[in-house]
Image (cartoon, rainbow, N blue to C red; front, side, top):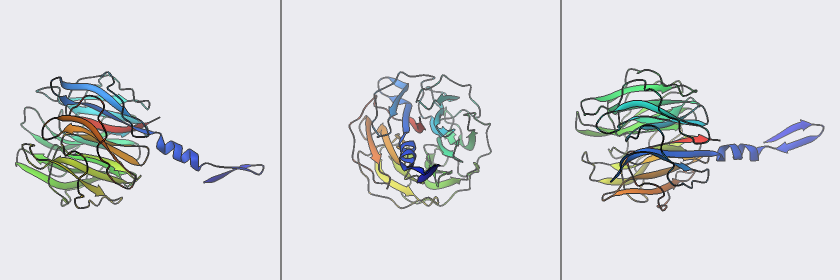
Length: 319
């Protein structure tokens, strides 16, 4: 776009817009691996999709938290399971990728939930389960544009955990898939989130039922679900993906690329691309990544960096 400065002087600020978009980075954090158990270390991803080694952890080490961006340039990790219990603590991430110490939890402590951004600068945590496994939830907690987590909002849709969530359409979000030990059922259904954080009732599922998958936005206004497992015992890992249009419509399965695995995480980077990372294959914890182009094409495996683990979370931030 050309902007007039007066006195006959103009400049092309397209490069500035492109630079702002490409400054978007990602962060993977927390998780579980063997033999170390739960982690609180993080791995940063630059605006070219290159991931760096482990950064010393901050906050409570735990598995199965959720993570989302907020404030337009920051991120937040929240909830999860330190061991045989659950927590509601959160950790804010600055626009430089620096993770803060624990913030006292708000809302129901739980694990296996998902989170995504909505409204352009806010976030939402949703669903999950208690540990010991006695309850599965459909409740949500909204995150303000300053990173303040709200109290529980009455749940909408099927209670489940091991689901994934991502932003789409520029200002909305979508929760999808998951599992419930109450009904011993895996799902492919989705729940759309409006640009004011209102969660819709269940939308009939598209694609294979599964849990322990990941999701991220790409292309500026679309999203993608990927990987996971379609066996309640987690023994049949997958590498298929399902794209989400800018109106929240989920497509049928796309043939998988890269190592089949579950318990991975995903986030956007570079303004219009995404990255899947980590997880557990059929035989071991892994740390490889798979990039997603701005047209939704998933790449083959990239050699792993950092601690191999699963049950982690990821989100975007920018500087």
